[in-house]
Amino acid sequence: MPAFRPRHLCSVAAALVLTVAAPATAATAAADASLREVLFVGNNWDGTATVLNSTGDFTKVGQINVIPDKDQRIAEINADPIKWIYYTSIRNEVGQGHDQYADDMYSTPDGKSVVVSRPSFADVVSIDLATDTINWRFPVAGYRADHMAVSPDGTKVAVSASTANKVQVLDINTGKELGEFATGDKPHENVFSPDGKYIWNMAIGEVTTSLDDPVWDWTKGDRHITVADATTYKQVKIIDMRDRLDAIGLTDFSDAVRPAAFTPDWSKMYFQVSFFNGFLEYDIATDKITRVKTLPANPATSTDRTTWLLDSRHHGISMKPDGTKLCVAGTMDNYATIVDRATLQEGPLVTASTPYWATVSGDGKDCIISEAGADQVTAIDFGTGQKVTSVPVGDHPQRVRLGHVQADWTGTSGS
Image 1 (cartoon, rainbow, N blue to C red):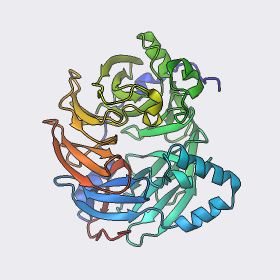
Image 2 (image 1 turned 180 degrees about the vertical axis):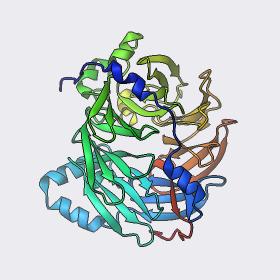
Image 3 (image 1 turned 90 degrees about the vertical axis):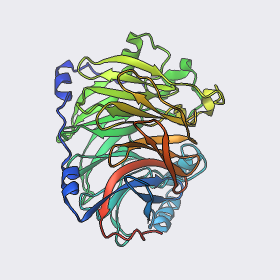
């Protein structure tokens, strides 16, 4: 497919460098004694979410069954040959022989429900935490649901409909679609700006083929960042990293932007790309890549790109809330590390088994990584760079998100 590269809209660059406002949901939750902050860990292969304390010892609070309607969904898929083909394809390719039942999740502002994207079922559902039943279900366009993002006020959730090349935005309480916008091929991560005005989507293109040598990069599809207005859902800006990479001589680098982290003032973005053991710094106002950080390669990691999980190499990056440190998941190199943002010097390499996501603890002191290869999450101290603890979860943890449950939730849902 030819690359879609509209004219660069320089006039909106200044509008995208935003003043940070504290999310309304965070402020409300902090003052609301009826809510308890937790970490939701999506166990993609067994269809559960493990709920952990958000700080301290990160002990288990409870578990949620996110596929209570599994029999009904499987029956529908078996009755539709096209759905069955996609369902089987997801299992055999992206799922590495497993169904994908829990990709991403966020809690509702009242802490009574959790909203989950389910790739194999091509939908988003809201699950009542008290009854373990489905409040609403939204089938996404196409045949696979992927990463989500929740608005700062907690009222909207954006989901990537990865085979339809679009992002759909839903009312988090009702599941009603509020709007949608087109993206590049295979939309992946979504991020709301802190003021809630914009949604950034990163399209990663095709990651399941073996055409991984740089000379075949053109076969991976149209990969770019789409910035959309979060009210009108119109495209505001397209950022194709191909031109930015070429400008600094990185012509062999993939332009598929994987996970990304933004500074507190939203002036810089740190992002990973396919096949690269490291990350890049992008200045939003000047629209330029300003620094590149290569992280250590594990000598035991194969140099054969076709053996790397979904073109990832490194997949997972988060930032300490004060903007001074980054946490990077070295997925195929089996480590995670804390990086000083000023100097880009990495700290100790903390051994991990296929770390596939990185987020931040509730108090901002630790980085939390999911270890998909060990069925656990691990906390790493931002200050020392050392491992704090590891906690067992379910089968193949991926996304980890901060959220809230009701303070009196017993944690028995799905247990």
